[in-house]
Image (cartoon, rainbow, N blue to C red):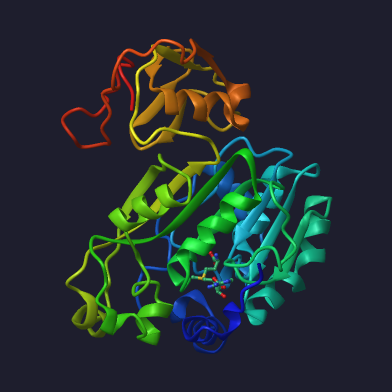
Length: 351
Ligand SMILES: C[S@@+](CC[C@H](N)C(=O)[O-])C[C@H]1O[C@@H](n2cnc3c(N)ncnc32)[C@H](O)[C@@H]1O
């Protein structure tokens, strides 16, 4: 079904913000759409090979670039001027490809202007920038089950129809495919009176995902177990914006979710996972999320969901997972970072 999302007033305000109001990252009023974290060395090296004009118009809030990318087909939702797309283009290599979708022609024009430059630099051309809406990827020409990885950097919060965005993501992902995205989250629902404020919308605050509603939305979209990889607090900085919306606490989060049939609680089937240390950028340990660090060659008990994430996805080549789910041993002790039951580094428990 095709939906006319171009008529949405929120989309209009966002398009105006990213075409007319902002001309570089320096024009942003807060740090919400502006990643402060230093990238890991392999991403820093790839970034050094991206054109300066592309980098000047970067408005992301995180680093949605996972491991094990070679040969993958990647879709970047709200690719903007293409910074992440050009980093990913290097990591997927000549046998992979990166499709960027964005609704703002001015941003796409920057991305497209430098396609030839990047192709000459990399030695191959594997990027494709398309005008379109993340709520309607079919019209942007993305077929069912055609993508290994969907990434997005500070875009989902800007959508007036988030359930459609997640429905489209899980439609286009291949079975076992991954969604890995960074976005702005809030610790509460933002009052309706602020949802149309063009600056709060454009700065990625008004549409920020309330964490509990996000969990519900993912469950409704068919993903019962999305994992937070990283969280950083956002300082609003601007006194005007602080006055309007400073009652809420905002975080930038990177989240991963898989197109897999998972359970809504972690269950114990006695399964064990061992990371082989075979990802070049992660020789000593691999972090699945903020409470699962797999040390190379160290066996770790895992719940059924984690076992599936490591054995039925592109990470399978890098893990040995033993056991199956024929015998159930009860609920798996499961808690994220900072809670009493969270995993220590001992390798004795997971989840
Ligand atoms: C905060 S910027 C981030 C751009 C890019 N991901 C980056 O990291 O530089 C948001 C981008 O999402 C695009 N966008 C927002 N809502 C969209 C929608 N519903 N469909 C397609 N693109 C959208 C905007 O045009 C803008 O380029």
